[in-house]
Image (cartoon, rainbow, N blue to C red; front, side, top):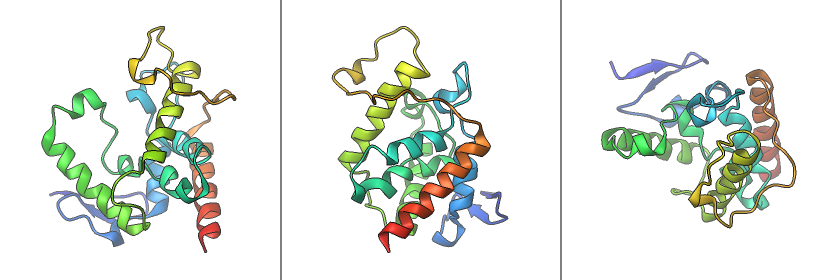
Length: 174
């Protein structure tokens, strides 16, 4: 068996992911329950909240892509990058799922540099506000921070904000 049943009741097959098995509510639900930094935080901070924050950092044409840049994690859980490097087969499955999500929402086939930069800005800001381990993170050297502080919200609030932001952006694209 290579499939799961999602929150919405759809069957999602990892061997054969199809556009019809992707649902924005499932993405929002999964991301709102997925904690950043493998949960190694003092407070819960969801991938959904991170994604919403990212969508406010980029220019208009990248906002939807920024909101959905981690959508694959709703189906393929967030594995820390150092571990993911040791799991090439997992990366292949994740890439396949990511491509189907990108097709579903008419996103570029690969992440835009602008969205990558926004992700780094959020990472640097999260390091300051949420995940400060007292260590310098070399990849964040010279990355600007958001002026405002990020305050984690409960998963239900993150879900609602993600869905509201998605529909706001879809409406703007029409």
